[in-house]
Amino acid sequence: MISIQNNTVYERKEAVVAIKWESILAAYPQIDTSNFIVINSNTKKQVQYQLERRGSKIIQNLLVQVTVKAKSVVQLSIQKGKPQVFPVKTYARYVPERMDDFAWENDKIAFRTYGKALEKTKGDAYGNDIWVKRTDKMILDKRYKSEDYHKDSGDGLDYYHVGFTLGAGNMAPYVNDTVRYSGNYHQWKIMDNGPLRSTFKLTYDEWNVNGLKVKATKTMSLDAGSQLYQLENVYSFNDTKPLTVVAGIIKRPETGIISLNEQEGIMSYWEPKHGEDGTTGVGVILTTPVNTMLVGKEQMLAQTEVKNNEPIVYYTGGAWDKAGKITNNVQWIDYLNRFAMEIKNPLIVSIK
Image 1 (spheres, rainbow, N blue to C red):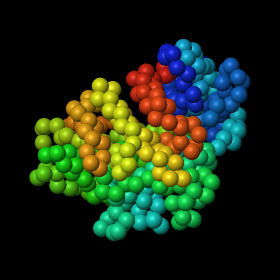
Image 2 (cartoon, rainbow, N blue to C red):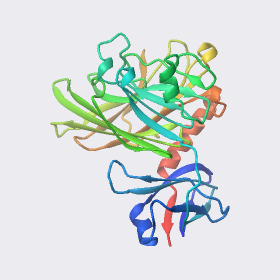
Image 3 (cartoon, rainbow, N blue to C red):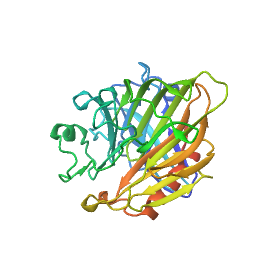
Image 4 (cartoon, helix red, strand yellow):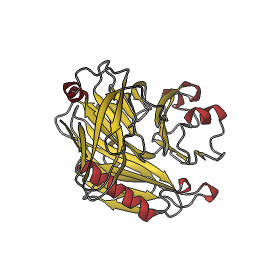
């Protein structure tokens, strides 16, 4: 029996939980990976799952999506059987037909970042982009095929502006009060691709940061049901001293609502309404101590430090008011605060 325990006073709705595959094998040594189902012991219904490999041939985790009420436990069992067909809830892909874009989405929202082919062109941009959506279906392929994704055809659009900024939550070194941008990503690798979690790694060419040569790899992971995705960045540089970095959010010229919570590492921006397109909320949650948060002319910055070859993990993403779930700044800040609390208080898994 697999128990998933929620010790917080908040319901964890449709949470994606990772259970170590070694633990599954210990409890179910005869498991057939091509013929098993996961059952919720309370509802007797099948639970959607994914075998997560993290880029390896060997299974690393069993991912399940469950709702666990406040201060309660959900129990699951594994049985032989054919899994029912569940919808795909996350997806990521390299987009060579759009100048090396890399794009990823879940059942709530979509994102993209830019590749080498876009560099030094009119449309070049440094940061991460948001594609808002109001459907739980996967829309990336459809939008790229239409080539008219700046217009809302019923399921959302791309109206977010990135330009030569960090956009929606990208990170870069910060030296002498200046963001030291890398070039666009050069190599990519998909490590897992749905249905509950998509994870991929982007590699960047070495660049000069005020005389220091820096390389970066960024591993991004998006779960079903989440407005935010996780980034694990590794910076390589030949210095024993930490490197100052910033995560950023671009501002629009009109007045939006800015919230800076340095103590909790939460930076939030509720954009001004953009005509008929609506309003996007953007957020960053750092898990490392924040030195300071700054509001400049073009963007907001949350400043922290990294050490050579040591991963730094943080979260970023957005929400669109026209999706109907998060429709104002108060709800967006509440979502970010709840998300930060859940990072610190993960669901507890035990197997008997």
